[in-house]
Image 1 (cartoon, protein in one colour):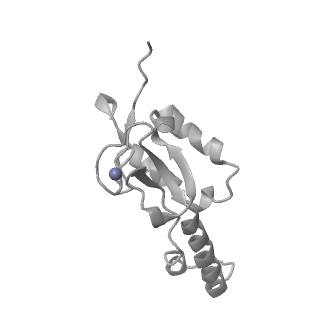
Image 2 (cartoon, protein in one colour):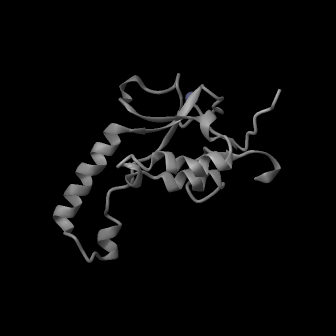
Image 3 (tube, helix red, strand yellow):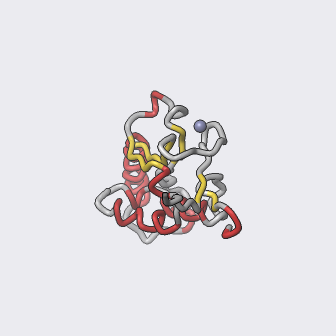
Length: 137
Ligand SMILES: [Zn+2]
């Protein structure tokens, strides 16, 4: 029997406990994507197509956040979203490959997916999930 390689652990945003395979996912909410698009339209109405000052840029809406939740912790009212079970991104290779699977999603660039990498690398994002496991950290 082959032992699965696990390089990354994930911690639930809601309960701060580790998420086991098939027990939780990385998730982006469609309502957040809709809210972002509305906020971006409003921002463009106010600020036009540019060039933009740094002051304008810092007022842009924040990117759509990816969440990590146990399925049992996911709030019922959170709505539909796109989910990636943590079992699919337990290795660096799988995590790096995931965006190629998401390229058809028009909302990918609106999300904070780069922060997923930052969190997995152990810094920069301020989030506590996607933590490297073991001595390779
Ligand atoms: Zn949880």
